[in-house]
Image 1 (cartoon, one colour):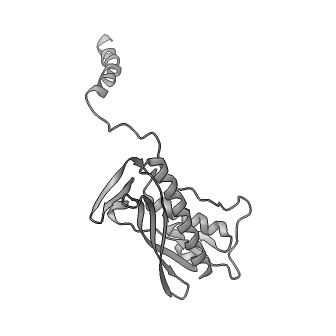
Image 2: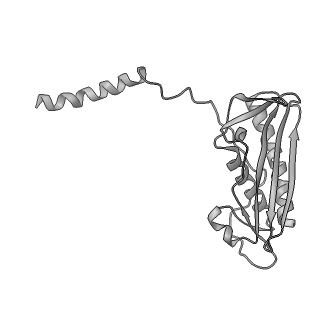
Image 3: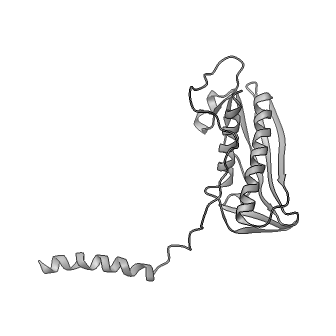
Length: 199
């Protein structure tokens, strides 16, 4: 009996010894950055399809490699890139921006929004594009959001447009840059929403 219980008693001691032997990663950041819409669609009765109201599918946005991470890129020079120390997104920027755009279009009330890729077949208008920049320019102390949008209507006509917003006078600090990027992203999302629903 004692031989059977001895391994069970040793197991907790071995688990306690593990943290000293292996590393499970660095210290977690104190906080994570996200994007929050300035205006949200109200809760309540849903919107039904019909009439002249378009059904907009917000599809997955592409990004360059510098944004396909959880870090905030810093443009040090025209040919040099770094990442802002201690600044981490809660998830990748393209996903955050896609949800922000979808919620902003929805809050306008002029269109139905389906933002899952599997519901795109229901749409009369699709929106896709590339999030080119969502970071900080050290040379100008600006937070920059730049988005190339592609709108396809129900007849298959394709329209493209570049949107950009900048917030100046921003210090290279996690909270300041995060807040400035949220303002700039909301401004771009509002312009995209007006363009998609009104186009």
